[in-house]
Amino acid sequence: MKQLISLLYIIFIYTIGKRLFSKRKLLREAGEWAIVTGATDGIGKVYAEELANDGLKIMLISRNEEKLLNTDVYQRIQEAIDQLSSIACLVNNVGMGVPKLDYYATADYITIDFIKNIVFCNTLPIAMMTHIVLPKMLKQSTTGMAIINIGSHSGYRAFPFLSLYSATKAFVNQLSRSISNENYDHRIHIQTVCPMFVSTAMNGYCKMSLFVPNAKEYVKCALDMYGVEQETFGYIGHAIKEYFTSLLPNSIWKYYMLFMKSWFDKHKKQ
Image: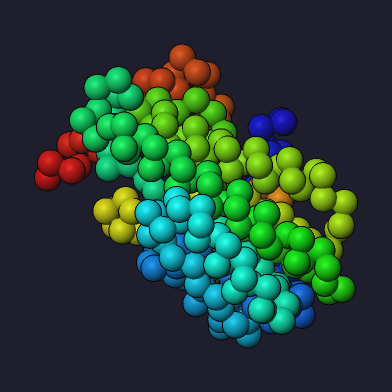
């Protein structure tokens, strides 16, 4: 019965719930500007487009991880942000993925430079950008301001063959939760968005399906979930899939991930 109630809750919150509780429309009243990192393509680009369609001016921050790994650049970013009239929303989207599911010990792409870059790229920009933007938001008198951090469902549990990537996304989840709990100003909402597979350049534009939306479909749904859930999978297909996989005990989950690795290896060879 408990599992059935949980499933019905997911269906409700992603259909009726988002229409009743979404605070997306409040963003245009919260400030004049939205800041989006990693907006070159995919999810970040669509966030910028959707927020612009909602009436916000957009400030785009480079996706180039080499630039964002240089801490000197954040001084220039802060100076630019200080010139903005008011901020409605920060979307921390910049990040790196991995080319394939593989064993951490033997994957040929896992080099010293790769480890350094993915750890820094998936953790440093979100920490720095939040530290820059949050104090400015706290000085504003408006309500409904948002910090939206793009994490991953892989940050919620042990994720074999994505060990390094999932660890960096666990950082995103934990930082978001902790800052949200210490932020007693309820005018600012900190949301973590945790997608599964979305058809983007990062994952080779995998074939779309009920569980694999394109970036536009995913972001439109995820933005509608702003104000509905503090931690959201953003898309009903992802929430339902995560619900069923979360029922698997770890002993079976490991074999499920081994199957997924084999499937992706075969898919990439075709």
